[in-house]
Length: 360
Ligand SMILES: *Cc1c(COP(=O)(O)O)cnc(C)c1O
Image (cartoon, rainbow, N blue to C red; front, side):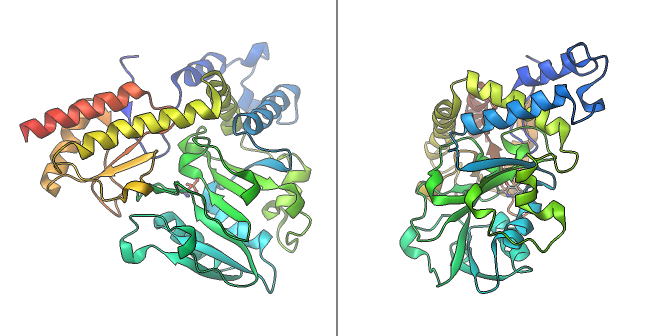
């Protein structure tokens, strides 16, 4: 649709057009109920169907084995930074974290409030331009879990290979959720905010291994306990009704488009187009990230000067290429190319990049 701009926002971000149109059509009068879905009880038939379908589809599309449960929680990914150590850490156990950049640092800061935490690898000295290999991880005794940020949204790096360690992994997958398959046997918990691949903001989607729930801490307010949410099917309190509803539509879209394998190969293709444009620009565009760690979701790049970057961003916006500014903490440019961003948008960007270079 011509009035839709190319939206490279890092989050909240572009969603599949058909899910927005569908929601628009049924928004005021949901399936003849005479009211909107967001106006009715979350314990009624209509919402029950919506939530059950979203749960079932999230397990199916993301190829999650039966020994996990999915939880729909409020508070975004950042509340999980606290809930994870609160639930998983006990006196005597420690948590290991990979410090891969801004989001990992946030997870470490919050975890330290609740238990003994150490950094198993620190990317600070290399400017957070790559992820560690397994042999670089300095693991200690009595470690309950290793926390990784599978994709660092701001730095534009991802784990291209999963860490090989003797402890369960916990993964913040916010910015590459359902964009690649996971070796589930390695994980106890996977989480992320919904607003980067799954739907609108207002919800964290958490996959938790059922067998760990019994051993989780219970001395905290009830909303913070995974075991309670799991036993109530994420209906302990009023769940995030609208995000769940939209997530269900996005999941249907993902399934129809070919599921996880299609999402993964499209992401690789779109990222490949952009990195090629950067690599073939005679260093006019420059990606600071180690090749092996390059993200398939957030492509960061610089131009020869900050003045040119500013000009690039202004002219790109005039050409309907929106939200290409890098995070305020690092500057430069960033194209977030999540699942719902059409390949055509990436092509529009690469041709703009070529024209901009030839003119400047
Ligand atoms: C966006 C993001 C977060 C924060 O998510 P909220 O839902 O806003 O709390 C955490 N981790 C990563 C990797 C992110 O990209």
